[in-house]
Length: 267
Image (cartoon, rainbow, N blue to C red; front, side):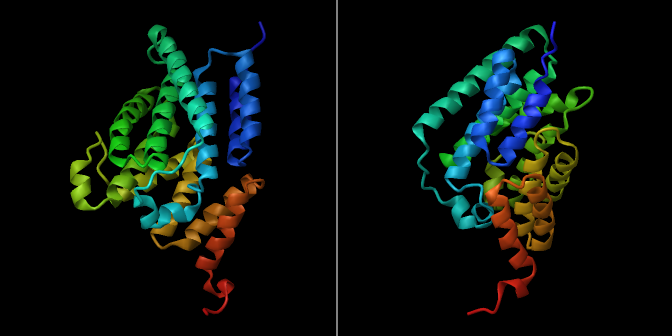
């Protein structure tokens, strides 16, 4: 029987995703799903591509969206593409069904647990970033944390799970105290340093989320007034994903922040 190589397809799909070639990523995943239609990670990754394509279209992935607090807290809902939204939630449901079917026979299946961690995280991001349901998204995040904890309990642990905890630690740690008092996520202290350390671990050792962790670390570096660190991260990202136009644009902008002389005289 011919071996089904989902891992190579996933790595190729993520390479296309991080180059912002969303169509190319979907084509790779669709071909591989034809070979192995029962693989939950393939479906979960399709959901990730749909979400990234919407975040790109709505300009949410631009670094100043996250470094400008007024944009982050703006409560006006964005207008999602209804066709993409339908496909996104449909493939999330399909991925969850496949993952739960695997767990019924093998409760510690790492691909199934990772797929569930991914989809709950993606739905959380959709609620928070596109629908602007911030407090509702914290409720959704709790389930993602349950799956992430299971991934870290596996032997060996799945490093990508720290993406969930690291992001939450930094976000909760950045909230005003009175908001943080209302937001409770199990085993999340709101420790920004811990969050950055966990994201750096994913950046170095993550199988799928390493580049995304580096993108978030660049955002954090800009928020923390360290544009030179953001520049170093973006230099590596643009080298790894040269077809991504947003990375090149953000690198140029960040270089001017890190080296004010490049920005020219103030007018």
